[in-house]
Image 1 (cartoon, rainbow, N blue to C red):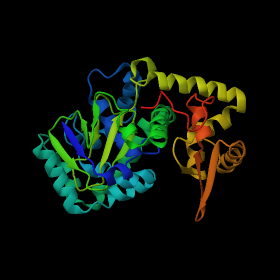
Image 2: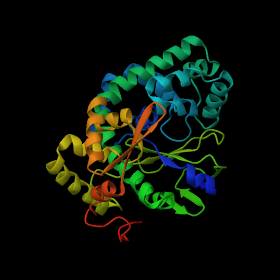
Image 3: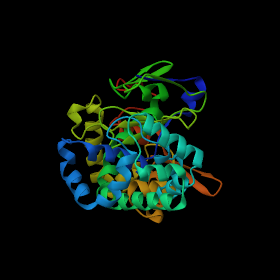
Image 4: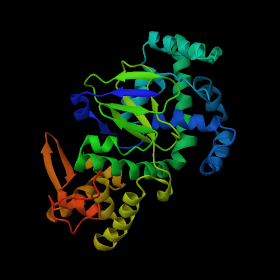
Length: 341
């Protein structure tokens, strides 16, 4: 059991990530490669990876056993800025951290082979090979399906971020269902080891993951930025505790597309949380100039508000825009909602 202890400052600093993290998805997808009987929706993917990614798998699988501990350096916080930033951070990991974490891997029952020991030593050739293996694995295993991964996680992320925006972090932390339970001021998660983590005002980053299955995953080192990677809702909304909300979102999205066009509806739905124009473009899958134009139209309709912060313009949903996406367009702002959690 994992118990994450919150203070008032942690509540204020808790947020949902903008989308899936390529390094976390890489590591967690390696767990799926290990499985003898993978879930049906991953059977074809697993066969493709085993057939085409044998070289990177030979280097990565010894560092990521089927169960239990794997080194924290494989999931650097800098990866939130993109794959290259994460790779630079990983390859810059201090030698003592490489040595300690590979040593912990050995202590957990996964004796490192010669390759893993060379990573622990932090030699330039070993780290270069590790970087090339990660890049090749990304290209083969994740890039062909990344659009699908993003779509599945974006649906979940948007709903949770919208819940936090409209009802607060306490409501957000209650959305995770039986595997992650909010018992203020402690977030309790099903976990293979018994552990307490005191956030101490650092807040918590919640990362939605497609390849995370069954139970959430956290960093092993308590001194690192607190992070909880959680499984997104299943593809079939009826199996989800938030099925009603997700089905409503789908229906509203269909009506919105007919009303304002598919691209503009996608831009509106991508605004689950405050973001810059470039972030909005990435989420909606359009160019920056197109995102700016659509945001201007939505702002003129009173659905989006925009503010300039230094050299960037940041956009967020207005209460009217939020109500429209939540299927509560007929409800006046400030009118009590029976659907809030």
